[in-house]
Amino acid sequence: MRIAVSSQNLRTITAHAGKTRRFLIFEVDGAGTPREVEQLELPNGMALHDYHGPDHPLFTSGLDAVVTGSAGSNFVQRLARAGIRVHATSETDPLAALRALAAGEPLPPPVPHEH
Image (tube, rainbow, N blue to C red):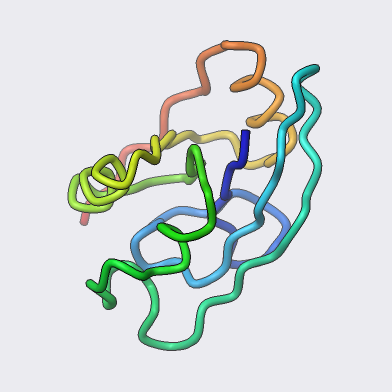
């Protein structure tokens, strides 16, 4: 399974996935062990909030899912059309979130916020 984690600071799960330009890319093996394989740093204008082309790197990276602190409904719908699930959570540790997902455990819900 290949999963992107929105992470503006390249350390923790951060919110506002549609405006995020930095993602940690992980592969999770059959035993549920996540391994960081790449850091995706998008140039200005390439956050999904700004870019609307079909060739966005999130769509062409072979992703199965995105984990984020928050995501708007348009972000969720756009990724769903590309076959990518979005998991919003208040968990800030990427490895803890990915291990929970791999084990089929629910992630803690995201913190409510205003758009």
